[in-house]
Image (cartoon, rainbow, N blue to C red):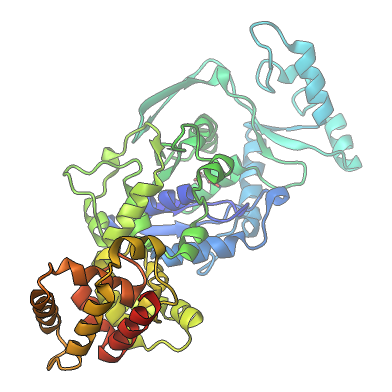
Length: 484
Ligand code: GLU
């Protein structure tokens, strides 16, 4: 399998683009094939200078390594114009393409002139081309004269009516169309650059792409591509058009409606927010693909083993941030506390000054089950510094008249604990509450509040072990003085 991801550098990599890249990459890896990155940069009007860099960085972050791409050779379409020119020359020579001089205004005029009730928007095609200024209607001299004069022109594919074309999409099955309904698409624009259609077909052929796997929005281009392959006498690659990614409220997940729902659309935003790349990929894999078993959580290797195109359905799938957050939590648990800590060292140092890496690992171990995202670690402030105040609602609910006395007693007892282990700390606590004839909760809640400032968190005794005797005693002392 030789597959390609062929983004246009018109903006940062979109999550939908990452899904397309992922499906291609998975198939390449599971078949021992080749994953190609091709930059489709022929549309100079929509070119964004740092888009390619973002695409490359995002793929790298996600772990989708590229076998052939701009790093290894000429994989930007702007570097490949000689190939497109050669294809054009052949198409023109063999009568499958022609030159057209019509200005946009003239095409507009043709549209209003030839519009009928049944055909309100006539296209430039077999039925209208004879009314236009092109190399099929103008004499050879006139064409030569215009070209000499430097009149702008485009090259169009000559699509003849009366034939039916069938192609089989791996996701959608048989798709039929009639050539009567296909316009004489522009292959080369007046700026001399190829259109998407021409460059895409020429490159897929030249790069020996076996399977074209891309978003549903390209399905409507397929007839044009198939006719181009036929005109050039090339074999059409196999094709799969992936279902649309929809917003939770329906409709395509556009930047605008995603913004409204608080859904980031660019991969870089997930990267910056600290998502696990493997979780995002796991989630994206399931946006369109349905594994045979009930299993939902997959590592990237697991996806390579299990993914298959014949379990990709055609209907649109809704993007759901909560579900993604759930996957992220699952993938956090698959990573070691060491790795999580390492990834957050920079942020930890920024927030708390000098944080020791071993300390961060212990913190990550303590919070492993409670994290939804690696950056949560930085948010657990009390793991890295003493609370400066105590949650008001928590105090009202948990800090009773006898709390100060009980906490003070526990603090004093902690000075004598032999081994600073969760068992000993718990035993000591139960002894104190036993002596005062109250339930353990009467001390557990105020102690938690005193050391962390909040009333929820990891197991209390594990937290105390993590904090260490000095910090615990000091924090208890401070709370007793402040809360009374
Ligand atoms: N350049 C197109 C895009 O931006 C490629 C579509 C295709 O894969 O053929 O998605």
